[in-house]
Image (cartoon, rainbow, N blue to C red):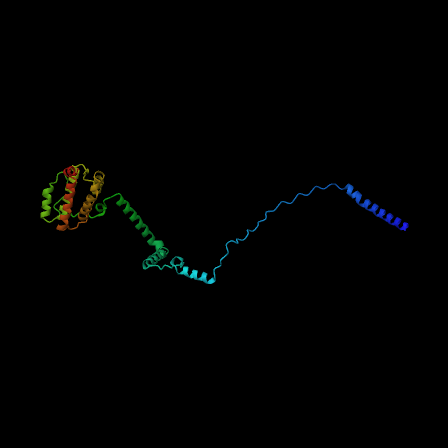
Length: 269
């Protein structure tokens, strides 16, 4: 019995010696390790708790469909695409410009008609510039008055030397209303010159007198311009003026002369 205990103690001591021989050197030679850093905390989104105070009310499908049908009947919720139909006028212009484009791309336009179109554009531009400058186109391009039929020499006329009362009476008595209209217009120019409203010169145009009068009496520009247009239309156009038309034009000439007279201006003031 004692022998068995002795053997057990010897075996236990031998095992403890072996463990110390294996573990003790490793434990003594190992360096201390630093403590690991704690992992950063992560943001975790938490869901909101459900709203249990207000119970959800789901509409039945029949009620939803009825509401949709009710809204669909209203005009504000009708989203229909309206297709506009072109009018006859739109179709005409579309066809017209299509023909113009076809003509411009044709061989005939690239030859002769191209230069004709350029000439028309240049002529229209020159005409507009001359009208803006108030050039007397009637006197420049119109036919000269047929002086053989008139007992009157327009080349030697001087408004300061003419006896307008006698000349006007002779022209009216013979029915020469075209000449009478010219004499009445010249008489009006003399009145405007005597009042210092225009500066009459034999080589000036009627439109030059119109600009001078407009600068000094702006209100008289329109009536004097109309009388000038009537005179040039009848005189340079060599038109026969009827008695009724002459009386109306003559009355307008006399009325403008009276309105611009010094006595009329003093009365208006």
